[in-house]
Amino acid sequence: MRSKGTDGARIESLMNMLSIAINKNTVPGDKSALNPSGIRIGSPAMTTRGCKEKDFVEIAKFIDRATSISIAVSKSSKGTKLKDYKDNL
Image (cartoon, rainbow, N blue to C red):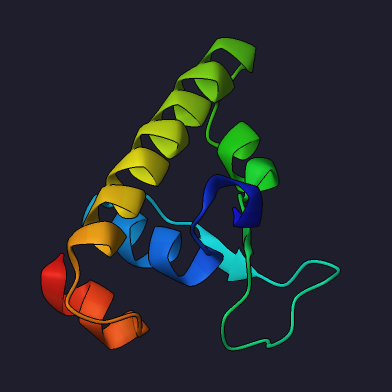
């Protein structure tokens, strides 16, 4: 998410509000585990529930849209902390 201009914690917060479960996750280059720039998608759980390739394409579209929304929310937040972001959501 770093290359998109957001982070995993913000995407996780937004996706949870949308009833889509993902997890923030650290990736190489992160400075803090509290503010990771990656996300983890539970693909084994989704395939167990019957998701196929076409479903993952739709899931990727949801994540892309959520990323765009997250960036917009971050820009309109009063501060730069995660709490400011969540308040603005």
